[in-house]
Amino acid sequence: QVQLVESGGDFVQPGGSLRLSCVVSGFTLNRYLMDWVRQSPGKGLEWVSSINGIGGTPNYADSVKGRFTMSRDSARNTMYLQMNDLKPEDTAVYYCQKGTRRGQGTQVTVSS
Image 1: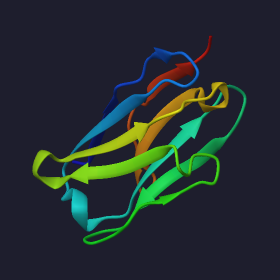
Image 2 (image 1 turned 135 degrees about the vertical axis):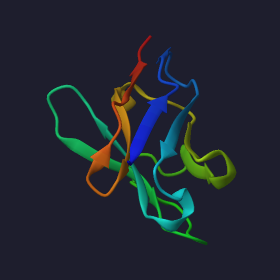
Image 3 (image 1 turned 180 degrees about the horizontal axis):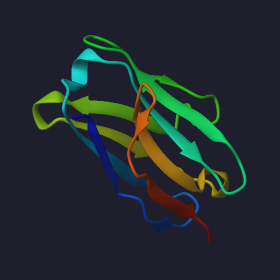
């Protein structure tokens, strides 16, 4: 059974950093295209980043390019999203995603 569990969200001031984690089970992490997506209040899902299967390199939305870094540790069945220089517009619930499956999400709030 495919499961994805996100964690690491928090309240942070502008310019701060957070690292989100996504622990997966039920499949081999590095064999599939994986995404991070987010949803802000009153808005639809927004794609943030993705990484292909074995040997893939991450791709990023323009809004986060240069600030966010996606990575994975297959030995730990865990995917990460390192977020630096956070802005108020990054406030959202962040989800890791495999196909149409997502976890429960983790809340990131950026505010002074």
